[in-house]
Image 1 (spheres, rainbow, N blue to C red):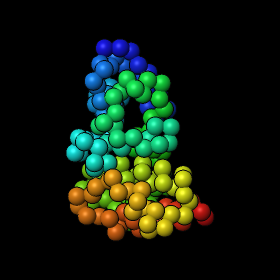
Image 2: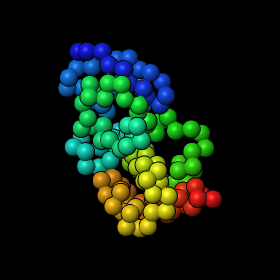
Image 3: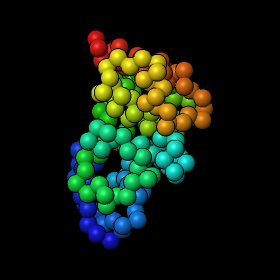
Length: 152
């Protein structure tokens, strides 16, 4: 075990982490971030997605000690009235909700890189996120809605 510091949703978190502790587990156990979820456990579904300095990371594959000093955003840390969350809610893009935190964070990353993504860009960016409920049409419409709202 060794001490590490993570800034999680703007709050410094000092924890003891073993070399094999996964970031997913540390965020859930030590930071109480329940939006970070284990789906497949092999980085193929996107349910564990977090943003590290604005870039998506599959936290189920990431060793926590490698992120010592990192600035991490989870869906738990999004502000009330978050524009992407609002677009998802308005568009009914939720179904069971298990994958939605990862989808929302991936949307934030996408819109930061491309304010007007076309269908191909959306599909390409989200290809690692799986929705077992099959809400892809609603999710795509929510992303379009968020992009339009951001452009004003």
